[in-house]
Image 1 (cartoon, rainbow, N blue to C red):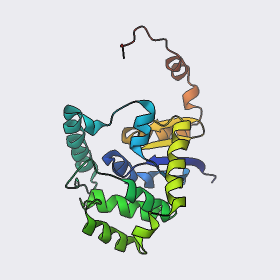
Image 2 (image 1 turned 30 degrees about the vertical axis):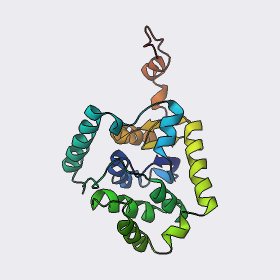
Image 3 (image 1 turned 90 degrees about the vertical axis):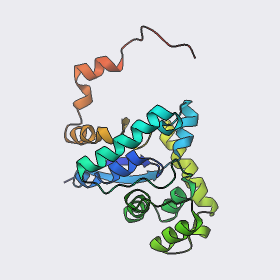
Image 4 (image 1 turned 90 degrees about the horizontal axis):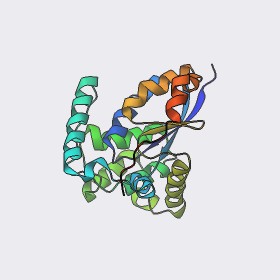
Length: 211
């Protein structure tokens, strides 16, 4: 059975990305997924937006919702001791390991299943040992740094504004709550040609907030 190519854009700083990473098994036989680490902050800067942890009410909601969602879906979950954290080194480490699913899942699990801090020097060393090789040297390689920039730029060019996001062809599916939407689209690629989807894609705005 032919599988549909799909790019999954993620950042380890996002609990939503971790939660969706635990659902990727649902895509077996449906999609050939390329894992693409991106810098969420780069997306936010481009679209002139702020992250959910950057204002207190949404931060509290996000943390509560993710904790509830994980429990409701039977997903091992524990927030790291500090959040948000700087995800640059874990992202580069994933790229240095070729974006291999095993490496990506190992990093996600270290941070979000075990609740460990990748910015703590001792914990970083433990993560590097878990993946094997010299993590400090790997994340400093120029080609690794460039690959992360290129991934982020490619995501922006595709219209990605948040993580996690699937890009399939020219379509973007954002968020863990879009998982079933993506699965239905893979089963029925004509889904978005439905007249109501076409209508809402071209709705005019009746008001605009001053910026």
